[in-house]
Length: 342
Ligand code: UFG
Image 1 (cartoon, rainbow, N blue to C red):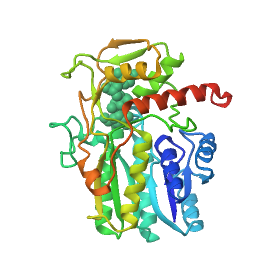
Image 2: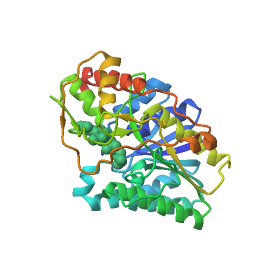
Image 3: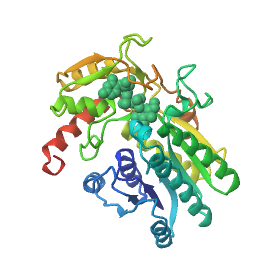
């Protein structure tokens, strides 16, 4: 069975390709390389022994996408990662985000309808919940007004997929990711942020290795046990596996509704300070950090109720925060050793 993975050279995409190949699926990746490098293919091949088929393709290039689908008639499922994901950038370039994340989504769904392709997995985000009223947060919690154009593309994306599913014979699952971190335990693939990392764990590893001088912890005056903000950090390998089970649910017609939504987290909240302390302890390194003011747009605390995914997908995160921080550090050390990443 052939699976199309858009954005398959990115952080979550590449780990999902590994898990698909490990389970015997044939994978074709398209990626425009806007936030990924071709070395990722080597990493996937080293881990799985298989070099996945890859085409450099921008989903905005409609003619080329049509040509791609014309040449690949045997695709059974699509996992759609390709999207822009920097919250800050989206505030300054909203149209780029709406174009990249929504126009391309619509176009893929149109292609699926025309070609009677049925199984679609969408990368959504816990950002759709905004600031939660109750914790842990379930899929029934209301979707709140988005805090950024990026967040809005995830909300609108979900709505587009829901409406499209009703109108066409397409089955879809939106996975609402909490905070993906870590890297493959082999150290061959991981996160590769361009420029200054906006997310906590890449900033932590880059500080520990000496690329950044100091980690800033954004706020210690939240209403949380140690005052720093709480998130549900999920190991990227666990997250990747959730895509495989979600796709299999659709391919085996085990879905209860044509459009379903699942939280994908660990169910455990960890504070920024806990992440910093765990990183130092598990890796035996000292981190230079200081507390600064809150970052605009951050919610104080969010973590997932994952019981629906557990019940329906039979999926549960297995790796711990320590595992993720150990693997992230191994990856950081590997890429800085490798000349071609410097
Ligand atoms: N943080 C720091 N210092 C940093 C970076 C982050 O203290 O240098 C803190 C943040 O304030 C936050 C926590 O670490 O409390 C996690 O921050 P991240 O940027 O790693 O993750 P976010 O929870 O802000 O963002 C994630 C996804 C986004 C998504 C968002 C929705 O990365 O794609 O959740 O809540 F939009």
